[in-house]
Image (tube, rainbow, N blue to C red; front, top):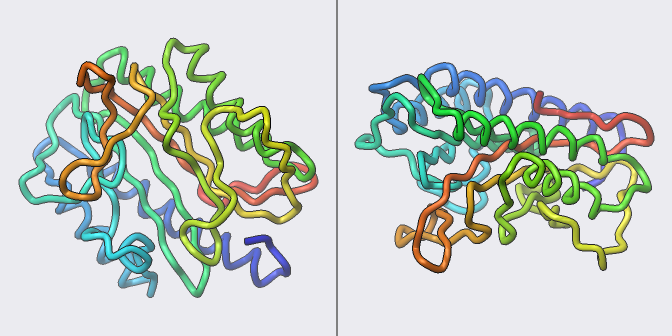
Length: 251
C-alpha cells in the first residue's frame, strides 16, 4: 500500500511499534532451556492484549502466532514444544501482525548465549544489509537499489544471499507488491513512489543461494546441489518510502 493520509501513517506506525515490541520481548526470553512454543505462547498473549491478529495465522493459516526458526532453518519455522533452545543456537524470530486494519512485519536473527565468530558475523551482516537497504527507500529511487545494498553487504563480508527469497510490499495485507529482491536485477526499471510501505529484509547465507521447503509445507532451509546445508540470517523492517529520510516503523 501507499500512505494516503495521516490515518494510514499512524496505523502503520502503531502496527510497527507493536511487532517490534513482541520481537524484542521474544529475543530477550530466548534462553537455553526455553522451547520455541513457549516463546510463541508469550507472543499469543501479547497479540490478545493488543487486540492484534497474527498475520501469518490470519492470512495463511500458519500453525503458530510467530515464525521461529532455528539453526539451519531459514524462515517459517513452526514453534514446537520439543524444540528446546541450546547455547550457540542460531534463532530467527519473525513477527507480523494485523492491528486496526494495518499490517507490519519484522524479524531478527541472533545466537542464543555464546556465538561462534561466523554466526555472530552472519547476524551482524544481516542487520547491516537491511539498514543499508532502508536508506535506499526514498521517493524516485530505483527499487533494485535496495537489493543491491543487501547483496553488496553480503559479498563484502564473505557471504552470499538467498536469491529465491525476498522482501515485499505490505500495509493492507501481509504480502503485497512489489517484491523486494535481495540482489540487484538491473533490468528492473521501477521507481519507488512516495508513501509506499515495504518490508525490507535480508537473507544472508554462509554458502547456498537457494531455499527449499521442508516436508511440513512451511519451514525453509538452504542447501547446495550436494545437499550441504547453509546457515542463513535475516533482518527485516517495515519501511515507509519518503521524499527525505525513510521512516522505519519497526525499530
